[in-house]
Image 1 (cartoon, rainbow, N blue to C red):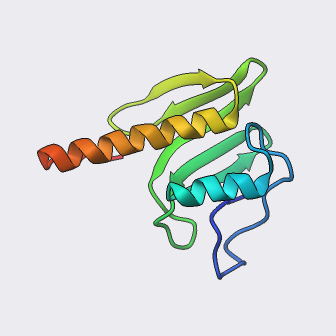
Image 2: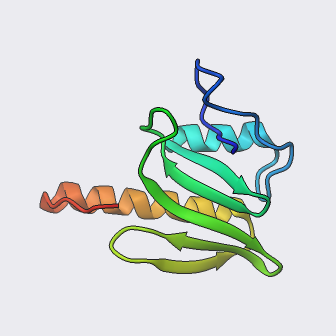
Image 3: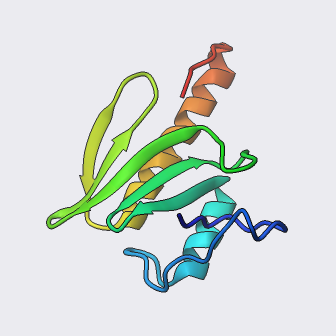
Length: 117
């Protein structure tokens, strides 16, 4: 499994592969994820798990799963049901999760409701 969030405990995290579709390199992917408090973990040769960075020992709220197909990257978003979308790059799929997460956080602040992710 690969994770992009830096940690002082290197046993928890492994290095990302050199190339990540849609990111210039693994450092760019790590920086993007850090800015948005998420973790991108490669769980299969063509599959990634995106979760919140507020995790310990590999836990954290799962935001979605991304799978690479011949025609793009399929994103399955979790939270209030499932939603599928297809994107040209992995970075576009991750960015959609970031946008949706921000919108949900903003709507919770506006109405005081709590939404399970």
